[in-house]
Length: 289
Image (tube, rainbow, N blue to C red; front, side, top):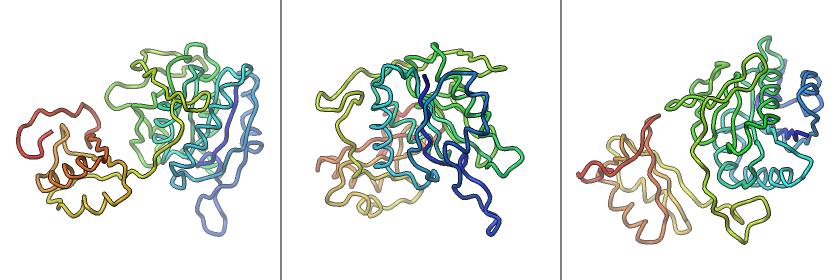
């Protein structure tokens, strides 16, 4: 049995004749009516969790989805889970679910780049592919996956690399975990092992008991001034994620306010704006690494 949670996104949208723009319109019943082949893949049960565009998703919404997904996965009759989602934020939700869910059952996120009003609507094919992966025993233990355009992508590496192309998703550095070829699920590699840690206070099926949302996100840029950091680290800020240059390098002007934030107990993480490679303390100049 496969659970299918519908949360919204372009896969649930149609073009509004009055405005010519895409808006949420379809629920689980209407979408599933377009994918009769799903019953040939596995028995399934559905839930209309929400009908939200990707940019409307918040960390609180992601946390509620994680708790709901954990409840589904705890059911002994459920072998895997498919979650439809808006593509603009599918990376964030997939990454969070991969971090906090403890089940080794397949969890597959899927969306669409076209609406039901478009002649090239990719929703049915993507949903069918996601169901095939969720029903595959080979997907067990691989963490949360994203399936788009017959590519199987790991949550920790997936990136949206095009605004509207049907092949908008990729894993830029290492490539997809596998593909769906003529209906057959084929895995070519495995992602790195997931961490086994768990907070004992957390609900069953989750690694943590709550989500801390008082966290800022700041991308560095040339000529960046210290007051920009100050504006992102207010009195109740608990964390700040820095998107740095290259190996994790930042302008020297923002080093002092970041050091001060760390001294005050703010957790500061550093990633790179580069699509591939790792951050490292390779450079010894002020702000290097």
